[in-house]
Length: 301
Image (cartoon, rainbow, N blue to C red; front, top):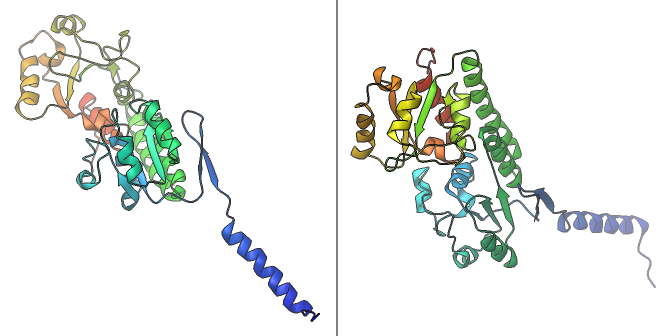
């Protein structure tokens, strides 16, 4: 039997070790907001976003080329609307999602049905669930999704910038008197928000006092008489309705001159997308809200 020189044996052994390093890379594991373990063999290349806010986060992180599908109302940025549609975030089309051959789906606890999540997992698709409850959570979620998708460094930089903007607002409003704010989120019937909402967190951080914070219902109906009785200093209308009806809602309040906000002409409109979606734009919503609640502050650009 011909012997293999020792030098050649060492080289062959080294080659086997290197090959094993290349072919047997350890999978990465992540804990989602529900405490579930999500395992990814490699950074995902085909991602299905199961909520409009998640689509915005993926674009913010520069991952638009990896997005394989989005939900209805994923219209920001505008090019997101051109991505394959997988239904609404409440009524997802699981068959459509599977047909897109994703290697990751990202969903939300509020909205996405657990039955759909289970169907996707049974089809072998990893599903990562998020559950942000306030602005701080939104920023943490952006970083977590970046880590999940293999762009942790970029996500850390971007989330840090958002956090800096939030801290700047808080620093400017912390010592100021807190005006009573009525936030109207629906025109007919008139509806508002209690303390268990993103909207409340925005009002609080912007230096305002939410008029309906202690209401027992998350999104209560409020009568004009109740608003007149409580007398808010500022009225802000955030509605998905646009155009004439949106402006008419503001003009309707101007009839009630006994309300301090009306008397001081402090009835404002705000883009509901800046408040309703737990996405990077909620920080812009906070900055806009702070300017409306505290116009006396020199905010700069």
